Structures are given as C-alpha cells and as structure tokens.
Length: 257
Image (tube, rainbow, N blue to C red; front, side):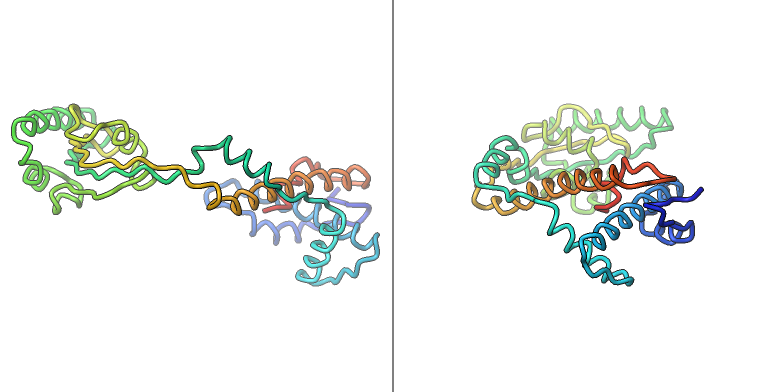
C-alpha cells in the first residue's frame, strides 16, 4: 500500500520527483525519499484543510503555496516577540552577542601527515629546535619561516595577519586564542603538522549593544515560535486525518525545509 491522506493517494513518482529537493551530497538517498514523502503528506494535509475552510486552492505549485500561506496566516497564531522576551534572550545568551576575538599571528609550519609517525616526530623535534633558536634571537622569525615553513605564508615571513574563529582549523585557533602575546613555548599540533607560533597581538571581542541586535533577536524568537506553532497545528491535522502508509512524526522538519 502506498501513502494515502484521507483516501487521496500520493504516488511513488511524485515522491521521487520531490526527493531531488531533499537530497544532500553524500547522504543516503533513502533519507531524501523519506523527507520527500513526509513533505508531500504534510502538503496534502494542508491542501485539504484549505479546501475544507473554503479557500481557493489552485492546482499549480505557486498557487497552492499561496493558499497554504493564507491558511497558516488564518489558523496559526504566532505571537510577536515583545520587549521583555527579547531582552531576556539577550541577557541569557551573552556569548551570541559580542564581536569576534581577533589575534594577529605568524607561524612556521613543519608539515607532516598524521598517519606517518616518523615524520610527525621529526616535525615536532624540528619545531622545538626552532623555538629554542627564536628564544635566543626573536628577530630571526621571518627568515626561519621562509626557510622551513610549508605554508604559503612563508613568503611573508610566516605572517597570517589577523584571524578570528573560523578562519583556520579549530585546533590551531584553540591554541592561538589560549596563548598570551609572544612566542609560544611549545609547538602547536594540528592535522597538518607542528607549528611554531608567535602571537603578535590579541584583541578581545566586546559585547554588542542590545539596541543593535534587538531586531535580529525578535526575528529569531518569532521564527522559533512559528515553527512550534506549525508543528502543533500539523500534529492536530494529522491526528484528525485518516493516514495510511506513513508516520508523520517528522512533519515539522519536512514542512519547514
């Protein structure tokens, strides 16, 4: 038996066509099929409800979308995010509302693939040796970078410039933002090898004033409210419908994709 929503069938062909919109690179195609089936089932529930309350429901896709939007606007109550809710969210999530930490960095990459232990150990030993050399002669950093580093920044004396989180690999950033300004006393290990690191400058992020983000917070909170309200509404429709061939527990995510 295929999928039926109040005795109206959703064909396998329709699901196959819809699944193209839900396929993710490298993901199991069956997951896209499942999402497509849920999305079409929810769409059919909404189409039938729109007809039931007397809305004009065109057959074309854009017309149906407009009818569903009209239905939702009429039957799903989404409260506005008031000032108290926005302020509370701002106060409870300070990390979300601050400028990025910035570090100005230069480094020497001693490249070594993770799977070749001998090369990793040799890279670590060389990095430690370069650090000892730089502790005696800090002015030699650029020259050593041009000689030993396997990063394109070697041409600039190892200078990476200003970085914030997300600009490089996480393990490098985690180390850099823990370090104080100056030459790191030990090599920094990453997937690429070992790095001799000097933090030239650090600029800590600062809180973003509430007035600058109030609109974004309201949009976020109202979208979250909309999702919850839609989920409840769809579950109500599903509970009153005769549904065969599918479980609509995942209806919320499929509808809102």
